[in-house]
Length: 157
Image (cartoon, rainbow, N blue to C red; front, top):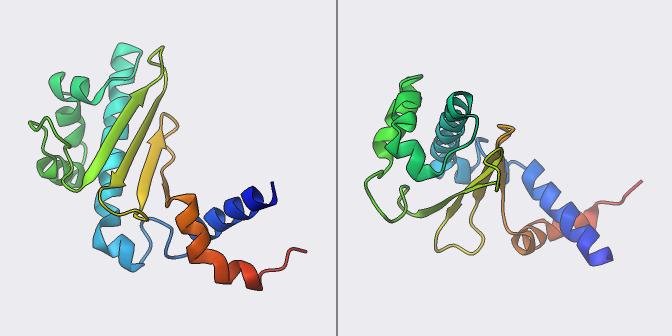
């Protein structure tokens, strides 16, 4: 249990640090983190629009086939640019170098969306769901190694 506690603390330290927060001025964020956040925000907004019309969330294919993601992209210039960078006709991943996963609840009243870098064991991942809250993080074992020196110097009250 103690190891799990420290793993959780390590993940929180990494997420709260400038290196772990998506959208920060860190090297990782400058190398593409903000683009990934816009992709998640676009899909999240398209899901919200689809839900208002259909009373359920959609698969990624449904968002494309229904035209909902295209309609939602007109809400901002940032969304329009992001839509143009997605490979919507590809049967592979729509975001080169990343795995996009959209899972719906069995009733269609909830979803989980993730975007994770491919080929890098300790790469960043971004996550959201029907609440609209965006998260960024790394695998727990990566967070432990990155924050080990921080944890050694931290004493709980």
